[in-house]
Image (cartoon, rainbow, N blue to C red; front, side, top):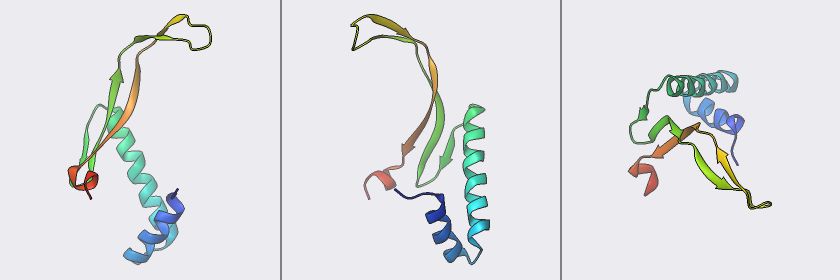
Length: 89
């Protein structure tokens, strides 16, 4: 798995900035994507994909241990749909 530290090393080399600056830019970018999705906006990065928040409806599920049916409340999910350029590369 690759983390922000590894990505920031690569970005800093390619852009000629420090790793600290690259890490801050990446963190601010991710924070902005999450904030916009929380506002209900879709974030479309052309050639990469779309980020958005979706509401998963309430549903009934079965507890596998007790076999009882339980109510699962609705919840908001963070969703990413990859562009066809990313999917089929």
